[in-house]
Image 1 (cartoon, helix red, strand yellow):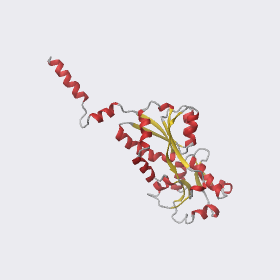
Image 2 (cartoon, rainbow, N blue to C red):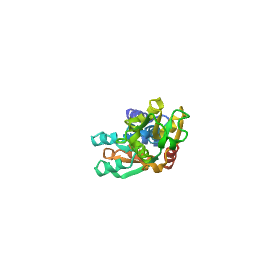
Image 3 (tube, one colour):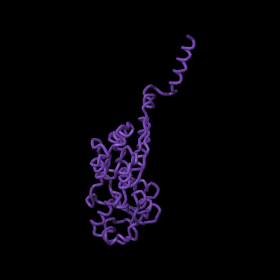
Image 4 (cartoon, one colour):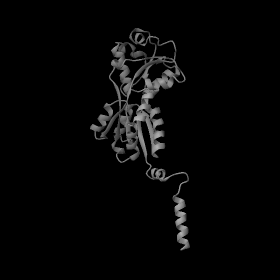
Length: 258
């Protein structure tokens, strides 16, 4: 009898976690981990949001960032990602059509804007005039074949009739994060970059900038989708739902997205 009571006490102590209530213990009991593929422009934002989501849910989100085109190729080749946050709306739809993603989970989480930026405070005085007819020594953009922001930059340069002339002076990054780093480091004096990354860079290097009119290129609609690998993953499903909440949408806008 004494042994039974002692055993019961030991089991109770083993199950008790100091400072936690039943709700917290329930979250820990069902905690899951998900790998989320994220377009480079949204990587820092996704990491911040993943930390906050983890605090609220007990789940853990691991972020893998690259250009949308590279992530698509990795998913096609069997990379074990549970969800995708793309920098366009076509790649997620393509994955749904190919049977690699759940179409019911498609949703737009951000709309990107393109900015002409230089770390030189005096370089971008009249951004439109500079793009249309100004002297441009080197211009950083992301690879248009892999990165939607690179495709938007190419489209904007075609809009002003300078894509062909400026191609020899383009410094091309594999993804938009690398293109931004070219300008931050001074390797390129100018870049056509996401407003979100320019806002972040200007915290330490104000420079000069000009927002490219949205009519100069197709809308940069960024879409999320749950991948087939993550269909049974509660952490991945929960994170996509979290991105659609009003407070998170407000945070995404504050980070430089429409």
